[in-house]
Image 1 (tube, helix red, strand yellow):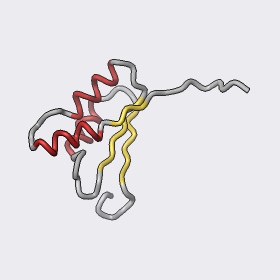
Image 2 (cartoon, one colour; image 1 turned 120 degrees about the horizontal axis):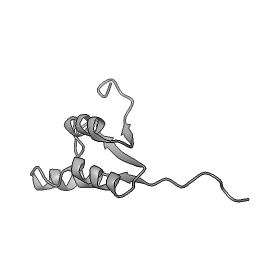
Image 3 (cartoon, one colour; image 1 turned 90 degrees about the vertical axis):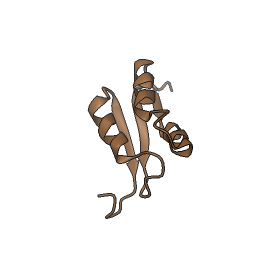
Length: 83
């Protein structure tokens, strides 16, 4: 039986933030990567805000939530610290 729902593309930008953090620089910028993915047709952007803020930072979440025109899938732990 054919599936009638369209297949959507979600792009995870966590590894962009991982590169930035490992280099200790301001680049590559997760926001820029997300906007490029969106312009290229991505249906959603996924990012994971960790308790230790190891890769994605709160600033990234704030900037993305204000700039993205598509869906933002924010993954995070359900803990007191994260709320």
